[in-house]
Image 1 (spheres, helix red, strand yellow):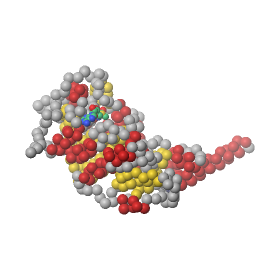
Image 2 (spheres, helix red, strand yellow):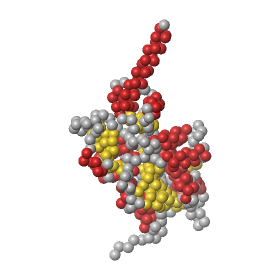
Image 3 (tube, rainbow, N blue to C red):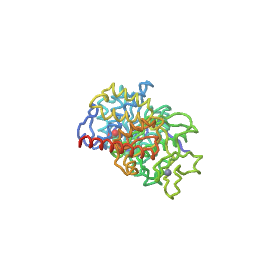
Image 4 (tube, rainbow, N blue to C red):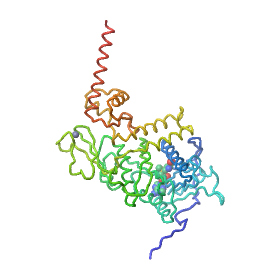
Length: 422
Ligand SMILES: C[S@@+](CC[C@H](N)C(=O)[O-])C[C@H]1O[C@@H](n2cnc3c(N)ncnc32)[C@H](O)[C@@H]1O
Ligand SMILES: [Zn+2]
C-alpha cells in the first residue's frame, strides 16, 4: 500500500544550498540591501513587492501572527522584506533552483543567521507544488503564501489553497498577456477554466481570469476567495492578485459569470449562467460576430476599498506615501480605491474608442470624468490603462458627452476669436 510521508523535512527539501558563484552585486529596495547574484530579479516588480509587504503587515497586526511561504523566491528579496518590514514570525523561502541557495541564505542572514535559537526562516529548493502539498500533508498551514510564478501556470492555485490557513492570504500571479488578450482561448480554458476572446480591456480580463481560476479552485475545496487588491503592471506584463481565502462555498449571487462586448455599440454586459440562452445586446445588433463573449470569470470588484485604505494609511506611516518619493505608490493605491466603487462595472472604455466613435479628438480625461460625475454616473480612472475610464455610462452617452464638450470648446474658441478681432 502507498504510504505518504508526513515528516517535517522531506528528502526534496534542503537547507544546505549547493555552492554557487559569489553574489554579484549589492542593491537596495526600500532601504534594505541585498544581493541578486545570478538569480532572476526584476527591479520593476518592486511595486508588487511593496503591495505584498503592506498586506502582510496588516494581516500580522490583525492576527498577531504571520507565517509566510514564499514559494518562488528568486534571490529571496520578498522573504527578506516580509521578515524585516512585515515582521513575519517565520518565512519559508523556496526556489526550485538550488544554485540560488547561497544568495538567498546570504540575504536572509541580514535579519539574523539561522541557528538552533533562530529558526525565523528556512530555505528550501523544491518544486512549489511539492512544497505546498507537503505543507498540506503535514498540516503545516501558512498565513500568507506568495507565488511569484511565470506564464499562466495555474497548477499552484489548488495546492496553495490546501496550504493556506482559512482567512489567510494568497498572492497569486500570471504573466501571460497573450492568453488574456484572447489569442489562445483553448489555453485560458485549460489553465483558468475561462474561454477568453479579444476584448478592448484585455489587461483587466487578465486579472479577472486569474481571480476566476482561483474562485473555481477554491469552490472545489468548499472555500471562496475575495480579492483584496488586483494589480496589473505592463512590465512583463504582470497580473498579481491578493486573495483572502475563506470557508464556505461561493454564494449563488456570486460575481462569477460571462461577459460580452458588442463591437457595434461598444457596450459591455455581464451574462448570468441562467441567461446564457438569451445572449444578445440591447442595441439589437443582428450582425453575425458583433458580440464577443468570454468567461466564466470574476466580474465583481477588483479590490476591497477598506483593505486598500488600511494599506495606504500604513504606507503613509512608513513614509512610502504622502511625500515626494512615495508619489507613485500613493497614486496607484488611490486609483485602486477609486476603482473599488461598487457602482462601477467590469472593464474600461478607452478614450480612443470614444473619440473614434464620435469622429472627434478626445477632450482631456479629467474633463470627461468631471462631466460624467456631474451627470450622475460613476466614473474613475483605471490603474491598468492611463487613457481609459471605468464608468457605468453607456458608450452612446460617452460619445454624446465628447461631442458636447468639443462643441463647447469650439464655441469658446469662436467667442475668443471674435474678442481678439474686435
Ligand atoms: C519571477 S521569479 C521570482 C522572483 C522573486 N520572487 C522576486 O520578487 O524577485 C520565479 C522564480 O521561480 C523559480 N521557479 C520556477 N519554477 C519553479 C517551480 N516549479 N517551483 C519553485 N520555483 C520555481 C525560478 O527559479 C525563479 O527564481
Ligand atoms: Zn450592441
